[in-house]
Image 1 (cartoon, rainbow, N blue to C red):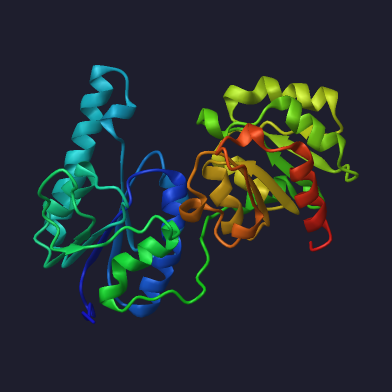
Image 2 (image 1 turned 180 degrees about the vertical axis):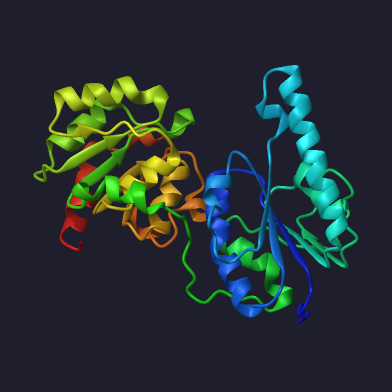
Length: 321
């Protein structure tokens, strides 16, 4: 085991919200192992809400990816902001850098390359050379949480029932307190193979005896959510952000969702989560703690899952709540 006592540690997780949430258990374990170390992390403006108020890190470097900006001036400002962070990282003299990316990322490795760290941890570049001196093997039958622990195993950091973490401001949680007896359907997913039709959601809701049912959606699906609101006993709650949605999720009894960031938020808030899954590799990305509640068709197309199958899983879990 390599002892990191009194070493400065930099972590990098600059991809999606769900990915960063899946990294939070290892942050807790790392802090337990090295309570007095400086532990900092690099994230981006897209996934920053998943690390906000995390008690296990000291400093959060948050930058905006230039590719997320449209205008030339905004792209330049984003690039300069990223450069400023790279300079700050260089000055910190980190001893260890760990890039939590199960697919090699040149942009993520940049944050490692800018340092003079003794230990640089990441996955191999399959197309050529990289500058990591400690490589993590990727096993896609393992969950992303387990992959993150594999990244730190040489430093004596092991899993000990740490849960994922997501902070919800008290005032937002309080706003939705009245929904604490409700179920929530989140009907949005970005990828076509992970989408589920409104007609099938309608059939699920119609076949549930339980009547305290809510619907949330991403803006692209607001109109569909309004249709379900009018045609079923469910009520559409139009949340304004992931933070706002998390306040609602924190209060409900059961969360039924398609694949996406919200699927990882609910387990982090200790809310039982049923996932209607499509193409996503659910060995790697299932809602942490709720692998047995993943509903998947052998076709890997979410919309091929029968509504009654979902109803049966929900009814089975009503008794356990």
